[in-house]
Image 1 (cartoon, each protein chain N blue to C red):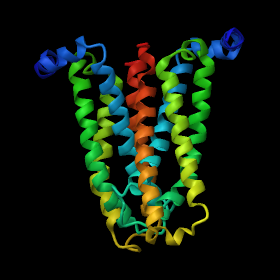
Image 2 (tube, chains in turn purple, brown; image 1 turned 90 degrees about the horizontal axis):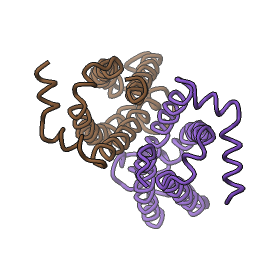
Image 3 (tube, rainbow over the protein chains, first blue to last red; image 1 turned 30 degrees about the horizontal axis):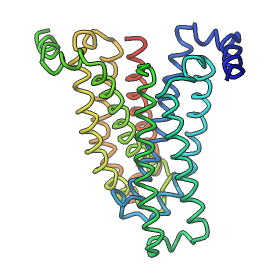
Image 4 (tube, helix red, strand yellow; image 1 turned 180 degrees about the vertical axis):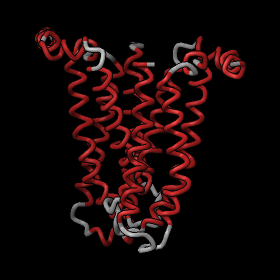
Length: 166
Length: 156
């Protein structure tokens, strides 16, 4: 544990993390771009989830929404994650024991595993048949609802991090 | 400004100011509602740009998104208005808050008028650059509203 803390102290002491932390624009602009990328990324994921769960866009085939949005989700997830990692590097000692930060990471991991499970389970089924296959529809509903819950919790926990309640 | 003072003095504003958790939870739910809203905007804008779910018509995606936009929009208001009245006296004087409200008004007007007409028009009704331009403008407006909202925290 102490070696982790030592690593974080080293990270916090670096010239560029110190500069970002102390600049009046560095941290706020980094954090704002993190939020902007997440809102678009998670917004597109939630849009897909609503279709998977059968709550919206039901006139569109499942695969049309699920597969055509995937590149955009990945394209906005990468900058969300990069800005998130940078934010952590700027203030590691503030975050690593923050319960809400750890909760956010846990929900994020579970959301990722849920998406991965859905991809693996549907990967062998041709997309044209999804809407006629009751097992795919049931899996989509389950994965969609789970994703809606997990991403909502990720966002809520993320927004609550600065409150340092615990 | 008596209206702003009246908002500030409301019982619910006082409760939100006094509570450790209520205001922060309202903020978090606001971000979630904004995310759902922007997602429904973005899928339609991507389709207008000729990307995303191109197997569906623009009108079909726009109509599917409309229901989500209405529900998410109501949630955005239900979580945004309490934040405003709680800090009405400071928000009222915040240049970024005022900017966000003007940008929001422009985005709403654009979405309800030109963007809707272009999105639900028959394919081929407009030259192909029109839906693309409308999708790009809409995306810039809504992401701009989101960014200016986030910056209020830092720069008032």
